[in-house]
Image 1 (cartoon, rainbow, N blue to C red):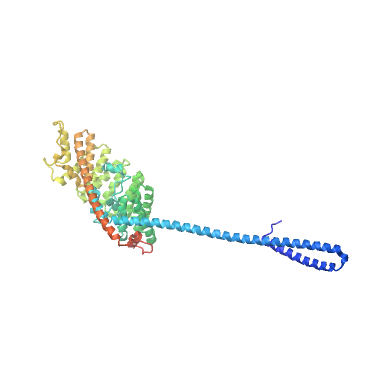
Image 2: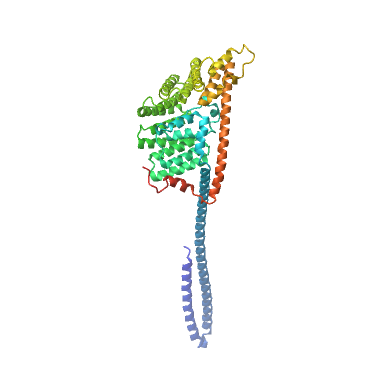
Length: 532
């Protein structure tokens, strides 16, 4: 038997009550008729008894209807309350979403404010860092010369730390790429568009300082806006992917960097052609990345393809071809392919000497790399000859023609080695002409050559000669560090003065949103016209 609903119960109760009312009226008429005749007292009593039962039934029916009505009102109230609860839950969820969105907007605003403050503090950073690089690294010397011709910018870097960079080898995971070198790796083969140049410089600043928490969001925001305005398959998008990949590489996030570089390579091949210099630059950066991960076999064909492109586009005797040969040699050296390594280095050396001259820093660096290859094969004499050539050339540039009274440092060192038994104590090195100052001509290559030749002398048991060269290298390093400290002190004073001026100006000027100030100015915000 199925359960009755509230409405069915109320309807049934009303039907029963109506029937009882009709029955009661009939009994009342019957009772009135019987009351007039005294002979029917028993029947009257029965009728009265029936009427009482009918009234009792009517009372129960009314109670049932009242209860049913009450239950109906309760159910209606419950339904109303349930509706209110659902509405409140929905409102609560909406308020939570609004709160989360507000918190995200607050965090984004705080980040943009932080970025804007950093930008205001470092407007003159690039100029000061270039000066700093000119005192410390030979890469900046070549990059400043290369920046006069935008087509010669190149992303070449040493694939792997060698004897030239002992300090960098010990701290390579903690040391960001220098700004000048970082800029070369990004610019190579494709000129940075005007609308990306400011952003490009800012990313270089932050990445070179190790400020990846600022550089990475900056790149991602620019990449998102570029894809919205220009589409994914656009050369500017490939450039920004390359920038972000190099930032990730500095953070040792090699997998993410490789994915971005492969994407950039695909875009550049589609939009610029497979034999464009920018494609060669991306191939080289990808080869560098694989080399850092120890994947030399995967990196070598990429490097060879980049070499073929550069030879086809620039000619076999172009300096950028020599740089690519250097990178290819480093890859082969890590696979112990020494015959190929020697061929690549010798060819690169010929190009540098013929196109850039014997005094170009790349000549000394390539000779050092070739000498390192000779050392690993046990060809000490050939390595020693190259080291001496580098030091002799540095001496001639600093002190003039060599003669009996004007000797390069390696000759002084060998004379001290020969005379060590003739006197108890050799004269202090400073009395031999202060040659260590010449190492600043193209530091750190000459300084590295001093250390490498000193190590070679030690292998040969020439300890006095080795100590002479090592002492010279230490003096050079100390003077370089002193210059760095002075440069940083001057930069700090200028920055403090500038911050004071900025604080005064900011008191009267409203703070601008970083995206409005930077991306809108560059024309890469959503809604702006695509760059042609």
